[in-house]
Image 1 (cartoon, rainbow, N blue to C red):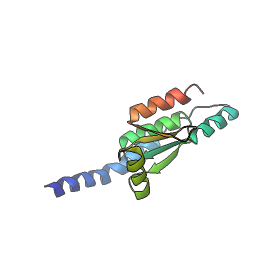
Image 2 (tube, rainbow, N blue to C red):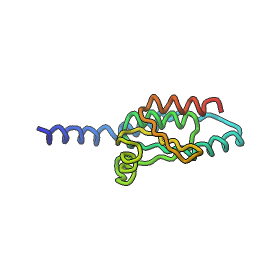
Image 3 (cartoon, helix red, strand yellow):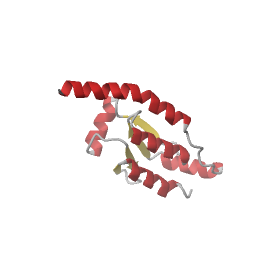
Image 4 (tube, rainbow, N blue to C red):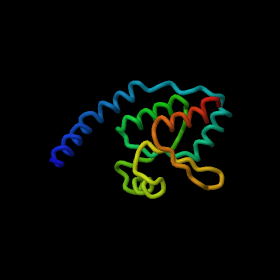
Length: 130
């Protein structure tokens, strides 16, 4: 029974995945326009952020759309197909769950933020006014 359930969901992901990626591409939001000096400052701040994601996860797509809306150049790491990224997420972040935003502060400590709503709220609070 477990085999059939896994096979069903794997097939569902194979069918819906490309549709979700096409929809993401077609509904790509326009990025925020900032003066070049301000955008350079935002890009520098984004250097301390890393998004762990699955390519076809709907919650990850939601976060990526918000990143585009805010014109944020945040490094993205695939935790689905890259074993090293998945292990880092589980070992350092505490759980293998996406989307997850790793936030490095100036002292070198990392904060791991899970849940798409929390990540979007954090990004809006930090970058929307910039």
